[in-house]
Image (tube, rainbow, N blue to C red):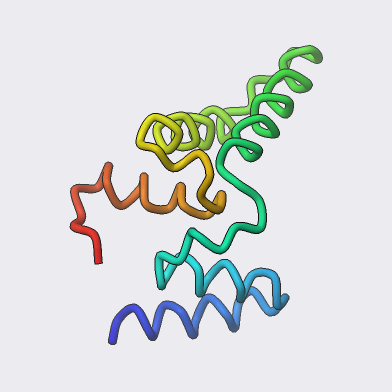
Length: 98
């Protein structure tokens, strides 16, 4: 029930259909239907970090996200949809899989 309330709330806050797709993917843990894989997401975050560091900015949030991508790759999730990094949050929090 709580998951349903959170899902509905997020869909109201984020009205774009693209957000709705990922809200559902994360809720259902359906990461095999790949729109953009973990490996590509990791590459893009690395490029983002590189661009920022070239101008002397430390992108803290990118560093946090990159750690999740790296862990996902080491846990054989490289070919999963990038939203699978939400499972890394679940794992790090000590939550059981659905």
